[in-house]
Image (cartoon, rainbow, N blue to C red; front, side):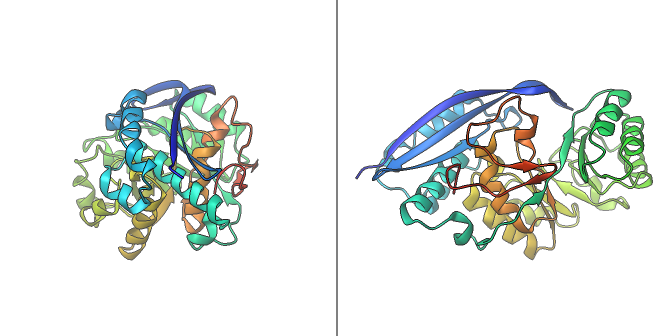
Length: 327
């Protein structure tokens, strides 16, 4: 039977405005891809990201361009060769994984070596704002063991200090989203070290990472915007201590597994993160993150409403997906 393909644009309102150094958003715009064959249907969700030149329309067009190949039975490895990394390939790749699992009756977890997946401790994100507002949010979530704090302005010292004081028992990840510069890097790193920060994500713009090579740092630094696929990693050795793997950057679970393996071989720590999406987008990432050093899969916790069939969250624990959702 020939495969079918459908693509649906969906919007999910956020519980509150989500602000990072590049701007603010009040909803998650996602594309849901469904591939059907022989009575089975596999789904994948992606989040088009403007930072990488993606829009809902451009990603939908890229998915639609593969309709004939998908109908003829294109494999995941063929998809990897045919499409560039990004949101469109992610939606198709994850839909194919889900379809294969349903057709064979073998869970994705078992196929990727995570046969008994466990609940994972995920970070909870504090959006960028004035120090007092960020401290108030940190205080509200001070019972969570891991907070991810959005920074990325020319002077974040007061923000870092305020959040650390408001949540003294929480480990803290700072995410600058490329917002710092060579001029303020050392000062921010010193404040982060003094406040006991556990990890700093992407302090400098991608392509301007070289300044990290010469600077002494007491806090590990993680590549996000600079690390998309396994092919990026050789150039990051000596600059970063860890990499943030996101399915929408890597272009699907297949590529993300390759990226994780290569990162471990090169000695990088591994973080598994997400764009702001629904449980359908997080589900494959929960399986990918089973051996991660840091997990940031709180996207559904930021939504006003998730999908009807959703991941189970208990406090800061995210549980593996049920088959009715994905995998």
